[in-house]
Structures are given as structure tokens and as C-alpha cells.
Image 1 (cartoon, rainbow, N blue to C red):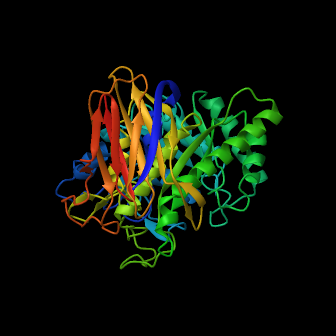
Image 2 (image 1 turned 90 degrees about the vertical axis):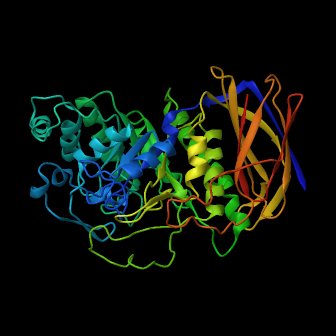
Image 3 (image 1 turned 30 degrees about the vertical axis):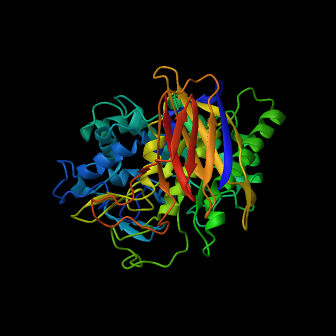
Length: 498
């Protein structure tokens, strides 16, 4: 067995726990919407066609906001086709996912769905095939009270009150050659600035997110961000980051250390933003919007039905997650909290069926994937993120080099006088005994649950039964305020203490 130690102190905090860190993402792709959140013929659908079983699971998941409608989809998006009487909406081609969209679920339905769910709607706009004029029309439709062309159109559709959408994404992954309307950094920066300035003239109280590189591994990462921010620094609030991981070639040791790669990515992006701040003499620090993150098995062989092009609601990107995938999602959440002084928002991508923590059967059951649990447990954290001093053994990985075997973060809430510790053991074969020194916190009670440790290849079955829910960790000792817990190999653990 290996040994590690953790010191935490209420005097050293990283940042308040922003609820925006627990956002989600819903794209017009595959069965994310049709057969996912929206299925009027389902026995559990409400009067609007929203699946109430999925709504219940999303509330349990703890998401606070949802980004929509893409993703790659948004670069060909015509919002006008998605509003008004459903019988009059056209069927449109989606080049991104090679599908036909019936537009039965559109902008108005999305806003209505977020209100039923009780989360903040966030919208991405098309800067691939469209531009400033179309962005202003969409903003006017959503946010202008009344008396203008687009606001009266919204009102005629039954929405008397404005949608009051605050957060807008200025395009999606515009650096990517796969993107419809792909642009160079200079081309995108000029369009983003023009759009942002015009939008703020119509509504000054907006939170605008500029596109960063599509991932840390893009060869232009850093240079793209520099060019965009040198042009757009004073008119945007955040720059985006997107990152996905998957287990490649059976290399589980490297996969479990994905959080290290994410940490390097975020710190490199922060350093780039700070360079532009310094050279441009800007007073404000740029925040990061990690608006897509997850485990995603890109390039895996297609499953039955996924090869269907131009079929509405055909399956796409339906990853069935293992226990190891759940551990990595928990590890990424640790990294997000550790960097939350600069990462002010994050969106788990996506929510249902399409690389989602929730799966459904058409006309059938909905159930939790293994990735559901670490997100739901972490989203319960309140108060502040604490800075921690961690001493851990190390081990080698093929992809990431030498990494700490244990990674951890902690939170504390002065109002409830309670806290949480989230910790991952990234060793595939050895347990670790963790000792926690809480300094000025007189712990009187503690409990722990974990995922992982065994059956790492296990996948939740397509039933409402949840075979892989977190298990209580019986190897926890709290004596005289000192806490010790044994972390099973390849596991993510949540410790509650007071």
C-alpha cells in the first residue's frame, strides 16, 4: 500500500464555488433531443413533450445551466426555422452531423424546457455561415421586451416576456477545419469583435464568450488565442476551452491521469490570456469558459444504427461509459475546482444519449451512466474551494510522464460548518492510505463514498436499475480530529466532513 497526506486550512481559499461550474450542454445531434429530452409519444412525457423521467434525472444531476444548440450544429443554424407553429417549420439539413432536423424542438421549446427544469439558458450563435445582422435579430427576439419586429414575433408565438438570455457564445470551434464556415484566427477575431460590439449596443448586460482553440492538442493552440484576444480582449468576458479524453489502446494508466493534461491545458490558456493582458495594459483578468468537457471515444467503430445519414433522430455518439470513465470524469471535476479562480464556467458535454451521463430508450426507460455520479456528488458542494497541500507518491505514464498518484481538492461552507474532499487514486493496482490534517477544523464526523476500485470495465445496463452507484468506504477512521481513509486502486472518492 502507498501513503499520501493532505493538509487543508480554511484560511487558504481558491475561489467561491460558482454554480456556473456545473453547467451542461444540449446539441441538436443524434438522440440528445429527439428521444432524449423530448419525446411527445413517451408515456412519461408532459403536455409539452418533455420526458419527465429525464427531467427528474437532470435535477438529480445538479446542472445549473444549459448551452444550446451546439456545438458543431450551430455553424449552420437558422433560428428562424425553429420558431412559430410547428406545422409551418421547414425540415432542414444539418451538415455537421449529416442529419435532417424536423425543427419540432426549437428555440422556444428550449427556453420552455429550461424553465421547467429550473436552469439558466445559454445560447451559442452562428458565426460560421451568418454574422452580425443575424446575431442581432436573434438577440432582439430573445431579449427585447416589446415593440420591435423580432420581439413582436416572439410575443406572437406566445412568449410575452423576454427570455433574458445573459450568456452568449460567439460561435463554436471556429478554428476547426471541420467547422462549417471555418475561419482563420484573424478572420474570426474581426467578426467576433463586430458582433460583440453590436450586441452590447442592443443589450449591455451580456456575458460574451469568444472561441478558443478546439483543444489543447490543436497545433495552433496559444497562437489562436493570442490573435483573438489581442483583438477582442475589451469586448468579451471569457475565452472558451474544449477538452475530451478516452482510454486509448488499453493504456488505462495514462487515461486515469487525464486530469493532469487538463490542468496543463487550463494553466497554458490562462498564461496566454495573461500575456495579452500584460502587453495590452488591460486591467481586467480574462476568465475561462470550459464550455465542453467529458470523456468521449472519438473515432470508435459505429454501433448499429449510427451509420444512418440524413435520418432525423438517428443515434450519434452514444458512448456507453465504464466505471473507469466515471473515475476520470471525477478527476476532471477535481481539476476544474482547483482552477476555479480563473475557470468561471464549465459545461459537461453533453447531457442525454449523446456522450451523456443519462441514457434513454425510445418509448422506454431512462438510466444513469457511470459518469453521472461524480458530477452529481460534486455539484452538491457549497461555500469555497480550499487550497490544499498534497503529498503523494508518483508513478510513470506513457502519455503524461510522471504524475502524482493521488490528486485532490476540498471545499468548505462557513454557513453549514461542513466541507467535502474529492480525491482520486490514479494507480491501477495499488491502494493508497490518505491522511487528512484539517488544521483549524475540528472534525467530529466524516463519511465517504467512492466509485471504481473494481469492475473498471463495467457498464450500466439499459434498465432503471443502477448497478454502479457509489459505495460506502468502510476504510475510514476519524479519531481525535484526524482522518484516515484507504483509497482503492483506480477510484474517485467523495468525503463529507463536519
